Length: 184
Image (cartoon, rainbow, N blue to C red; front, side, top):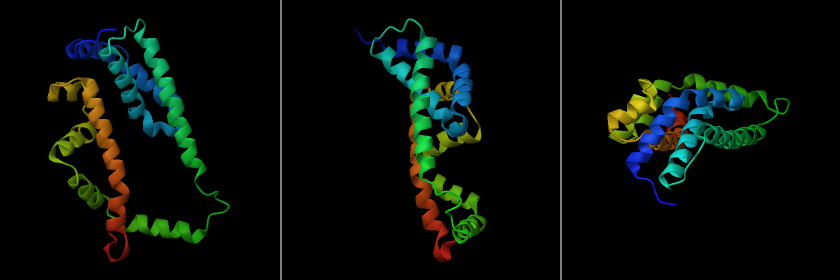
């Protein structure tokens, strides 16, 4: 199996994304239900898997079927992870009123705009720009790919890494700025 050129793989990905991108978003949204915050990850990882297969030179006769099958696998993993995390929570009957009140007091006292600013400032200039374009201005993968002059798969990979980095920084920022005398 001969590897496909990057330009050919980018073009094929763009064609398939234009045809099936919106359908796949709707499909993942419906199937993920309670775990719907994972829709972007599901769609991006599905297209990234497709792109990598194309780059490896694999011929995919029915791209729509491949995408849905791949999305199903992603959905199964996301739903399993969602419910695994949900099982770690305490049953409401066993929860203490005091713990809930403390959490509420902390949440009320925090200045989320300030925390967001601290979090964003921990990102590089390139990451800040990508964050603003993707999550503030809501640019699509296609628009970002055109802006950066890279493939949609590369943009999907960058945004996925950015989300992962932000998720890893969130608890750290809250802990550093929400405890003791530093409570916002």
